[in-house]
Length: 142
Image (cartoon, rainbow, N blue to C red; front, top):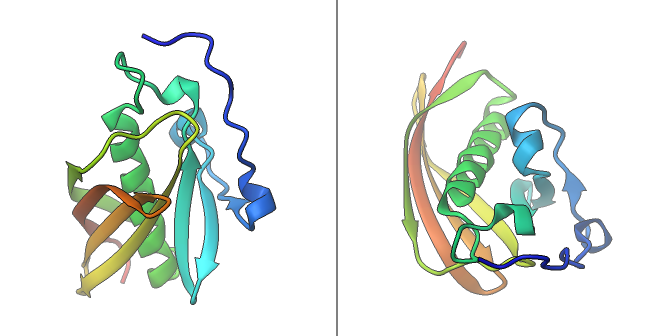
């Protein structure tokens, strides 16, 4: 296990990202960053030493948590902030993520019904795919 790793030096705010306001659980693992690209939100997080697993890489649970948040926020953006809940979430790892990496999630709503959103998401570090996700979100109050 690595110890005493320096904090990442990349500044997302200087690159046009803004912190996505949140609370409670996400505050413990965030912040999550947001920017708009062609009227669609993208989300990101900066991998810190606290996100490591025993192998010194970003813990898979952090990537799953981030994917859940990014996809949920994308559905919220598309529905005008309707309440929602994750029904199913699948994640496939493609590459390890290192401390200092800036992980960007780009989510797509493949299909939306009156009560469900079917989504996919790619997580990238630079030009490298690190994970793909798919999921279903329950939409309340539509």
